[in-house]
Image (cartoon, rainbow, N blue to C red; front, top):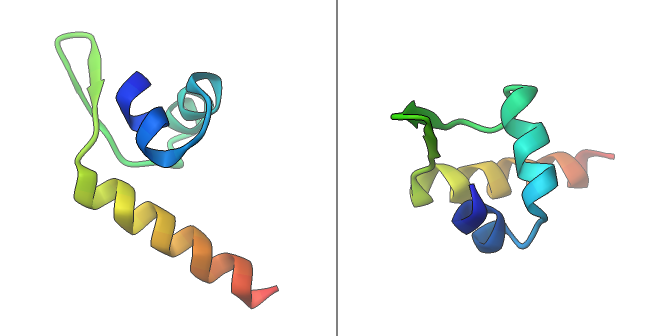
Length: 54
């Protein structure tokens, strides 16, 4: 989660909350949460599009 938070430019606390709320896709493997870079990019694109709607 630390690397994903750094990649997105957000805090570890926030990515932890997004995972707990199931708002960001990830896989749990051996007690660790794993994120694909492509999925993180898609998440950012989706959030950008949502911000334009309002």
